[in-house]
Image (cartoon, rainbow, N blue to C red; front, top):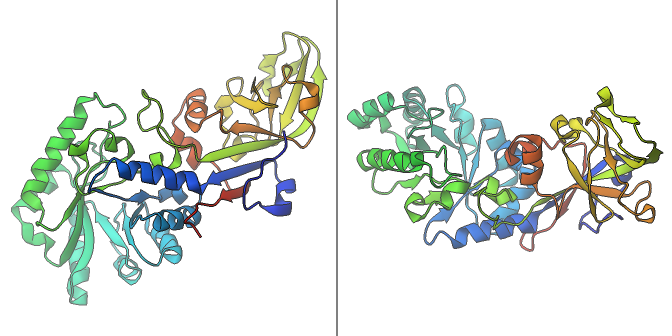
Length: 382
């Protein structure tokens, strides 16, 4: 299989790497628009933390901006600073808050902290007082996930002492769903009720509310409020694993064939000799491994597409190499230097994750930068 035309190619670097990662920005934009169609008047943000789930925030965020996205979420201050350097306009919320000792950088770069504790709220109000003007922030309420956000005891204090928010220009009150990928899970309704109860007592009239993540969007309108925060769905992961995926696949991972060989019955393959061929076989050695984010757990479980056929990974995945049994592929269909799909039109990220015993989020965020990367342009991206 020849390398497909993938838009802006990486040039000579393609021949110096064992794999190519193609990111379809048009598919990301299409997924964003599909989500927007479900929302009515609710606005749709873009979660681009962890370098846009490993796909490159400096490419993804501008594509979303030109598609109409105006609010973005990252995890850390460093991510916010990086995003601001390529996105001079728009709201950038920093989920970890962590304004203790770093308030000046938040203010200088117009980043909005998501405050998760009374201590962070106090630090931000002091920063506002020092500057003599209100500072924008969001408040995160823990509605039942027990991770980040104001826990019930601190929320009770804040409700009793609302002047703790003096000096804060409250842009958003948010919480996060723990079980939204399962639309029958009772915790969804429990968290919705807890969130409604809290904000009914807390929010100023003009403040926006946000609860739904990618899967939460599909729970229904009552979960949408003013702003939803999809991440995984933008990048093609299925927000409802029990249902067909309505979203477009975004990534394609192709590995280069470094060697083709014939082996006899009983020949061991790979570290630990965990695979022995039950028949004479033809093997293809591919130039990527677990150092490239292709999980070691995919040894003897993974699938590739070579010469138009699905073929198994045989033996263990090693650091830089893996081996495929290509016996069922006509010899004339494969040559040294050809590329096979490890993720692609016929192998979704979700399928790879299931075979690896993990989730699609971990597959995407594990994709490193030693691939030759190609970006298929969105029609509105620059």
